[in-house]
Length: 105
Image (cartoon, rainbow, N blue to C red):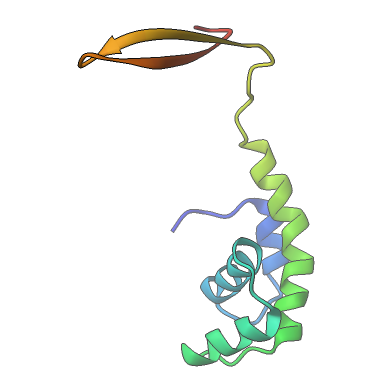
């Protein structure tokens, strides 16, 4: 398992559930349209007893820290793009061909 970002590790330090459970709950809460009570039921089906308010506290504590950590690794996107459109013959039929190019080519 990878080492955690120090600010993320600091937030997770005092939490009493396994790291996998906490991160799974927070990820599912953010990634899918699930309510906290649905997450509570889903974790109960997997044998983990966790209250919906606990999942909510995890989300409140972790999401700002995780957002900062992920934002640092976000790749920059060029400000300028050029789009080329041409009409070519493919297999006897005329088709449009689009091509987008950034500053680097």
